[in-house]
Structure formats: C-alpha cells, structure tokens
Image (cartoon, rainbow over all chains, first blue to last red; front, side, top):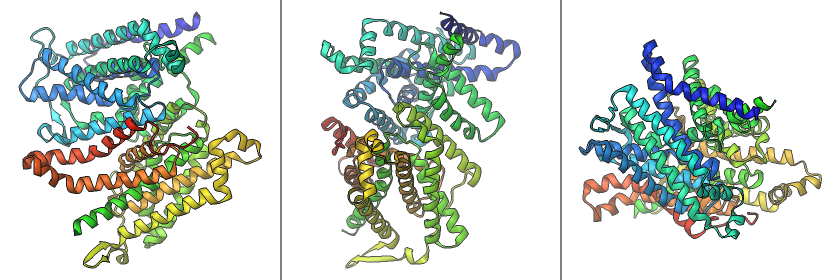
Length: 314
Length: 305
C-alpha cells in the first residue's frame, strides 16, 4: 500500500502543477513556459491514447504520429478552404482519424508481434508521403493555419491561458475515458486478449473485433491531439507524421510506465522537459538522450511509475 | 525502349542494394530475434566512412574497403557494448533502445562531420557508360553495383547453406539453447552475425553514396523500405528478402519513372503531376498491405515461426 501512495503522491503533485501552471506563468511573467507546457499537454494526450492500445491492449503501434498529422491536416485544410468553425473542424478531425484507424487497424490486426510494429510504421510512412504530395496544401513545406479554430465565443484558442486549459481539459477527459474503458467489460476483454489471445478466443470472444474497436478509439483520441497541435503551432506539415515522432510517443509511454493511467503524462512531461533542458546545455542534446534511452530500456523496467512503486516498497 | 531497359536496370540495382540492407536486418532478426532500427544508422556510417577514407587515401576502392572494415568493427563493438544485453527481451525494448541509438548516431555524425552532406566522387573509370545492348549504354558504376551485390548475395547463400559456420547459424536460428548445449560459443556466433549484418549495411551505404549525397538521416527512409521488404518476404528468410527486395526496387523505380505518364492519360496534366509522386511512394506500402492481407506471415515465412 505504501508503494502505491508514493506514486500517487507524485502523480497528484504533477497534476496540481499542470493545473496551476498558468498562475505561475502569470505571476513570473514567463510566457515561454506556458507555450512549452501546452505542447507537453497535447503530446501527453497523444501518449495517453497510444497507451490505451499499447499498454492495455498489447498492440504495439509504431505509427501513432499519423493521427497527429491527420487531425492537424483536417484543421489546416478546412481552415484554408474557409471553414473556420471548430465545431466543424474538430469533429472532422476525429472522424478522419477514426476512419483511418479503422482501415489501418483492419489490415494491421491480421498480423501480430513484430509484423504489427512494422506494418503500422509503414502505413504511417504512407500517410507521410500522401501529405507530402498534397501540393494544394503545401506539400513538403507544410500548411500554415492562419486562423485558429473558432468556437464562437465558447473558448478563445488564441488566448494562451484559455487554450492551455482547453488542452488540459481534453487530456483529463481522455484519461477519464481510458480509465472507464479499462475498467469496463470491453476493457477487460481487451486486456485479456493482451495476456492470451487464444484463450480469449476459445471462451468465445471475437478477438479482432474487440482489438479493432480499441484501436479506433485510440486513433480518434490521438486525432484530437493532432487538431490541438495544429492550433498550437499554427502550422501542420508532413514532419509531424514522420516515424521518429511515433518513436517519441512510444518513448513517452514507456518512460512513464506502460499500462498505467498517468504514466504517459509523466513520461511526456519528463521526456519533453529533458529534451528542453538538454538542448539548453548543448546543441548536441541527442548525443545524451540516445544513450539515456538505451539505459532506461536496460535498467528501468516499468518506467517512472514502476520506479516510484519500487521506491515506495523498498 | 532505351528508357525501359535503363529503368529496368535501375530498378534491379536499387532492389539489390535494398537486399544488402534487408539481408542483414533479416539475419539479425531471424537468428538473434532482435529488431534493430539502428541498422539504417550502420548504412549511414558506411557511407560516411567511405567518403572520409576515400578522401584520405585518394582511392575509391581503398576507401570502400576501409569503410567496410570500419562498419564491421563498429557493428561488433555495438553488439558487444549494447545490443547483446537486449537478446531475449521484449521486441518493444529493442525498438526503443535502437531508436535511442539512431538519435545518438545522427547526432554523433553531426558533431564529427557537420550538418552539411558529403560527396563521394567516383574515379574516372567508373563513370564511363558501358554498352550493354547495341545502341544502349548504361553507367559503369551502376552496373558495378549490380555485379557486386549479386556476388555478395551468392556468397551469402553459399555461406549460409554450404559452410560449417552457416550451418551453425541456421542451427542457432532454430534452437539457440540446443546449439549452446552442444558446446558452440553462441555469444561469439551472435557477435559475428551482427558484424556481418553491419558490414552488409555498410556496403549498401557506401555503394549508394556516390549516387546520392552522404547526409544525416539517409539511413532512415531506406530502413523503412528494408522493413517493408522483410515483412513482404517473411521475417528471417533470406530468400524471401532477396525476392521481395528485387520486387520492391523494381516497383519503386518503375513506378516513379512511368506512373506520371500513365496518370496523364487518365487525369489532367496538373492533377497527374501532383498525384504521381505521392502515388509512386505509396505503391510499395500498398503492395505490402496486399501481401499482408493475403499472407500475414509474408511470402516466404521462415519455418521457425
């Protein structure tokens, strides 16, 4: 029980920090930190969505960044075509991600293990090339989003604080949803499939259908992160779908603790802050980050959440 | 006609080059059960080594040989220092750890050689066009790549199927505990196989270097192609990798060469010229999707799995 309380305390501290951050930014006059954390919160949302299939469902998707691009392009393209309303942009972003996830998932889930890792990777690369070929929407150079999504007075996305809280609310919403899913009958079946697919099938569960549903839910959530990200950077380009971005998301999930509710958030915060910190020390920050990842894999089983659990127990 | 023959040979050359890369990847996966994303980094290092050594020695061949040795050593060092500890771990751990290695290698290259790309100039005797058919000339260097890669493929086949080491490698792939129990130094064998894979990747990199620029990240796009190939061919199967590599090389090259014109027949000029590059990049992935739908284990699954 003590182990649980340590990780719970740290999680609570982190969440409180995230909620109070705009206050700190306001008092200290440090605007940069709010911009940085908006990005962190959005990517934490993407990591949390990946965690649903990777941590709880055992589906190692290496192409999750594709949804960031799809959500982002939905916003960017609609904005360019003169549809500025967020009430249209966001549902379209979610629907497009869901449809993509449905198609990709139906094909990818025919395979398992390494094949699954690679086929999701390849499909994301395909999406990357498609985006690069969209000459009307900037092609390789990307697409500038001149006006952020307009929610007709409900929230103003151009206001930093409001936008930050919108992202944070989305993050909390997604985590709540993941929590409900994981503890539902549906979620238990998906977790059962992670442990032993054959056994679950023998009991009579249509394995692929459950996994596909979970895959689509996760993709849709990540599409939301994509739509927010495009609004945050006022820009979307094929680079957000590049496979190293998918790798970043995986690292966040594993670093924080796969299959834990708040692990991905922790992972995103630590990974991106570390990146920021190291890049301030040296231009060659990846020289340190790379071997650090290797060490985390070799020695840090269970990520930060696992570590906190061990600290509590030991 | 000229264009068709030329593009056909280009496709063959690209396919063979992809095979060199995919062979190392599939060997390492089939035998050590290790997913090595950093394979593309070894390809990149091969190219950088070749450019550097060729500049030092003033000879392309000498530079290439030195680079080959250097990637072999680099592969062995990498295996002994880091990757050895990953055997038997979850595939996800492999993906992450080798992802970290990619970051490291890209940054190390930027630190040592700088962010600008390098060029590896060809010696004069390799730049002349060679007549292959009456009236049709083909660059000597691309022809040399085809010959070298075919030779390596043959040697690899003979080495794996006909020699004692190859027998041990195959035995290690089918049952690693048993071969260890029979008194074979499995650790050394693994290190050797990894070194071999690294050298093959390095060879692919240094041969591609004079055609493209030597630059950071050059290994990443081609690594994805190599993954597609081993997925199509069946992971762990060298024969599958060979056939799939030729297939993918052909489709990619011929698609890029002829798709724009084909599309122009059905679409308007502007639409065709925008859709063609994207569509030809997608072709291979479409192919992979089709293969996986029909045969989820690839075309030539290794018998073990």
